[in-house]
Image (tube, rainbow, N blue to C red; front, side, top):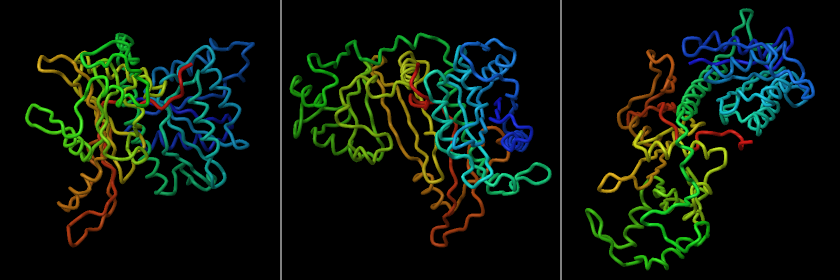
Length: 418
């Protein structure tokens, strides 16, 4: 994987550039990071367009050819340096190399906050219309007291800081793969995927407003739908509607159904909205998919659904960016077909895999450790010196199990499109 690193400082002695150099050198076996210089970039002035200048075009070409970008920002008066802001202005004026590009933010400062306010501001800038970068959520790398952070050889002294940077970089590598897997689909046919559900399906309920909060009640009345103690004959069973609800609402996963017309028509009430891993609201049922996804995700939703509809894949899955040591939430999207093999919509399920992994570790007395042969993905988190529960043989390690996978529709976290 090829990344580029940009230090947001033009100072001769920049600790943020030093931090980037350390990361590029120390983790070179896992990822190739090329440092880019912004010293020759002129201050932004839209009246004197420098887009085609050699300095700006150098950045544009390097960023476009990279899989992702790491930006290290100092903090000047609670915000990013003028030089870095000017660079981003040029990169969102007439050229847009950061559009859809995965970006990781890090930073160092003289004081204990470690450029936290500048990083927050930078995140907002990168997600602005016209920039549209896809910023790794959470996972803030904040190196404080930076004057004392490095030894004479340019290495970070604190092992805890090194380990945290390593863990965050691993997450970013997975994040980059997720975003770029989506964008690899060059075929523009996905754009025909109508998320507004303007067509019809065999089960479309005519005469009921899709966006009505009480769509379920209106549609049920319109179709004389079975309810309560009415029986429903299934492929391998006979259940009442009440029994179906009991059964589905006690599934330990969150289920969602979208039909072939891209209308969101069902989710199981396993948990209240506020407690769900992927929150759904009763009033959303019946809505077209365009109404239940943010604008920034529409392109990716179209790509995923189109791939499933056209049979390019039967299953799309991804871990949620920002998973931690005690959670590993996965989204799965499975194409559904009728008895004739015709596409009939999507079965989405969301599940936190960590309790399953944790139970396995406790039952077997095993633990999660780094795979020394896995130099790029680093797909398993390290279990550092865990103790063992004498009663169960369980590892008390809180390692993070992560597996690279295909993306879901909401992999993008960038700003709305301009």
